Length: 486
Image 1 (tube, rainbow, N blue to C red):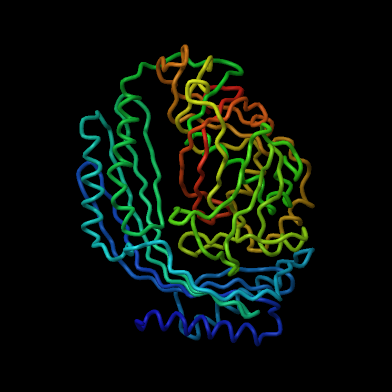
Image 2 (image 1 turned 120 degrees about the horizontal axis):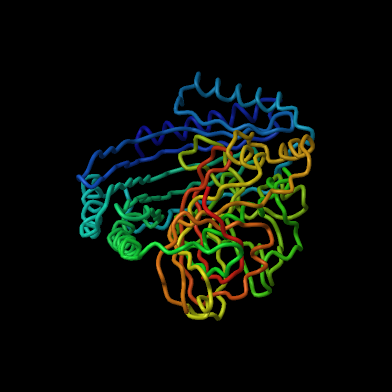
């Protein structure tokens, strides 16, 4: 084992011993992280930068005076560790959270997981990764583009997590992602995210991923701009657009969002048609896959929606204790570990229906390939989702107690990134600057569920934490109002 790896483990052990001996600390989790990372940019002019580096650090989540605080530091000497621990303890004590947080003091987890990579991602040279991306972008050379841009990032992550109650897990994860965009001179920007935890095998997928995006850009470029429909229309969503919609809705199934008064739904509510089934899973090799979460809990599948009704919410250990249920490993670490873990879905699985593509588009007005990022109507919800929030989920109840009813919570504008007008089920020109008005009852209007599924991946920001997500979903047919994009 390298000296850097040993230093990280020693720092983790020192912190655990220190926190366990501190009377102000009721419980703590500490993670030691060793990462070998690549970050590169390729444009239409070729490779612009390639950086390879090693990063070591320690994170800790400390419960003090009933509230939790989270810290991450690269200073793993004794002085730096003592300083970050003291600041975490003081922050928990001064939060003045009304209801003390609870944690699992009795269940001990011990385990290792070697990840899903046959060949680790750091075994491939950075220049080879850059050349792979550059060669893949050549599939768009025939397009009239104003800009071509791609950012490839990966990390070989070795992490050990220990708790003051005796849990110890060690994991290895090879996580890689590609963000790229093709900006048409005579049309919209085609943007894609692709990610995997399969290690070097992901590099073999990049040419096909870029070629598919180039084909979509070709179709958009060739299409005339059609008149936008008005008022409520029938929409046919591709599996990818439906996946984006389900990811948006899943935020309202997070327990802390419910505690904050930001969810329009409750357990038992009908959220969609009777044949809607949604499960949060952990796919081997998925971009969002992990074997254990930040609380050292094994990640396990959980049914969220059954027969169109909400069956349960997403929990961490604290909120699960509040609701007398079990945590399923949904305390998701932020990418890079600099921000606290958050309650979040991992890989949503939406069951397929029996409608083929023709049935989804029959008499529909608009076909949506992809959405842009949603724009929330409620200002308070926008601020809370994007703002800083402590690492203590129950503090959400304190925020809810200080606010009034939020009638617009759960409503948003979903701008269409790639979409087409339909005539007799066929594409009849693209739609630009059009948005779908989503309200909490829109999914109940879904009349058909597709029989073919697709997977969409991405990175979601929740209270400054950057969280990976993946959704495998079928296409949908539903009714919703549309408007000109803001």
